[in-house]
Image (cartoon, rainbow, N blue to C red; front, side):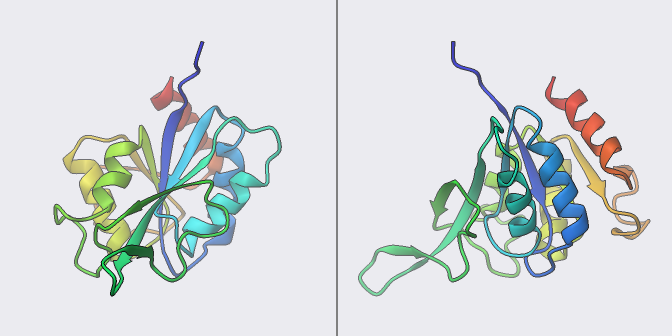
Length: 176
């Protein structure tokens, strides 16, 4: 019988690695029967995927929703820096990655959020906040991870965790 694995999205900065937070979440997720979904780029996305893929005998794979650019000949190629070297299943899309993409219907953020069974948001900027907003809008389970990573007045109704064990218990509850 085919085992269907849950998909956990980890959203965060595309420029800052937040190495400690991303590594502990990536390593912990790799011990669960889940796939890891990110935007497939740099920063948190690379850190969490690297940590996940470094765990031997894991069941899941890393999935990246990859932005592309239209080429002069009409074809599409991945944008520079995408996918990061730890993406095992790249999903190439012509959907936007521009600064205001957030909740536009042409945003790949929709794919990230709608595909995930649960979402963990690490520190990030506008793109991460847009993904958080989409998760709230579409009632996707989401938690914020990182002590002081988000202003207290940003989505105060969301669960905030400062410890990896809290996040992992929350994920286990959401995917069981």
